Image: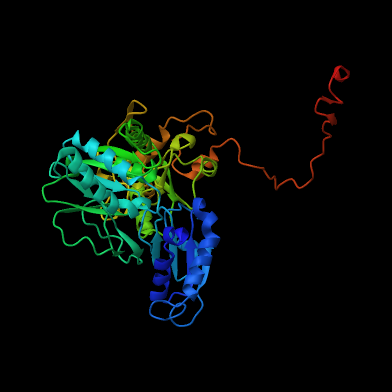
Length: 509
C-alpha cells in the first residue's frame, strides 16, 4: 500500500483510462529506477481491474502498453518527449522531482512522490524563526514535499498560537503546485511580464481570481497582494540544497532566504555559499563579452519554445559581430566540450533547473541565455535581476547594437579598450571594392600589423572555426596525394620497457 500511495497508482490509472491512452511511457529518474518493475506491475494490475464505473482497461477494451524510460538524454526533471516518441507513446508519466517545464507534443502526468518530513519540527523551526524577523513569510518548497504542505499549515497555526498567543502576529503565505497534468503548450511566446508564465497548463483549480501580482518558478505559483513586493517577504525554502533551490536564490537574490533541511531537521540560515554563485555568474558575463566564437548548446528537445530561443540567440550573436555554432550533444561535460576548442564561450539553452553548469572544470565558460543577452547587448547594465527561465526572454527583443559597433568597449578582464569584430566587414568590403571606399579598404588591409609566424594564433582573435583550424599547428594526418610511392619502413625498439636491446648498459637492469 505504501508503494501505491507514494507512486499514486490509482490516480495514474484514472488518468490513463479517462483519456483512453494505449501506449504510456513511464519516465523514472536514476534514484527511483529500482522501483520501476513493482510500479509497472501495480499499475498494470490496477488498469486490468474494473474501475469504479465498471469499465475494464483503458475504456474501449484495448490493452495498455507500459514502457519504462530511463537514462534520459538531458535532465531528468524534464519530460523526455524524444525518448517517448521512439515508442510512439500517447503520453508520459513522469516520476520524481520535476521542473514542470511545458511540453511541446505529448501530454504528461506528474507523480512527485512523497519525501519524508517531520511536520512538528518544521512548524516549530519556522514559527520560532519568523517571530524574530518581523516580516511576512513566503514558503516555497520542492514538489516532493507538496503532500505535506496542508499539514504544515495546520501545525504552523497551532505553533504560532502557542508562541505568540495570537496568529495575527505571524502571516504565512504558501505557494501552490502549478499542476499535476500538463497538456502540450501551443503558445510559448506569451508572457505576463513577471517571473514565469503559466501558459496552457491543466492546472489545479484552487487559485481563484486573486488580484495582484502572480509569480511562478520551478512549478510553483503564488499571488502577492497589490502593492506588495517579493523583497518585503522572508522566503523559506523547504527541501534540499539542489538546483531548484539555486534557481530560487538567484531569481530572488534581493530577498532574505532561509532553508529548512527536511533530512537533518534543521533550519539553515547561512546561505553565503549560494550568494557567491551570483558573483561568479557576473564574472562569466564579463568573460563572454571578450568572446568571438560562440557555441550554442541545445540542452533540451522537449521544452516548449526552445527552437524560438535558439533562433533568438543566433540573431543576438550575429548582431554582436560574433560567429555562432549550434551543438547537440546531450548532457554537456568537460570532455565533450573540449572537442570544440575554437569556442570562446558556450550558451546552454535548457530548462531553468539544469541551466547552471559549474564551468570551473570546462575549458570555456558556459552561460545562460539571460547572461548572453547581458554580454552581447551593447550598453546593457545588470540591475541585479536574474532570469533563469528562457521562456521569459522570448518576448524580449535583442537591443540593436549595429549603431554602436564602431565604438571601443572597455574589457574588465583585459584591463583596456578592445574593438569587437564585425562579421559584415568582409561583405561590405566586397560590395564597395569597386566604389569610392576601395582605396581605403586596400590601405587598411596593407597597413595591418601581421605576425612574422603566419601559423601562430592568440586565442580569441579568430572570427570563425575555419580560421581557428587553419592556424593550428596540428591538422591531423597529412596525406600527400602527389607522391603515391610508399615510405620506407623503420624498425622500432625491441625488448622490454625496463631495458630495450638498443639501450646502453641494459645488463645493469
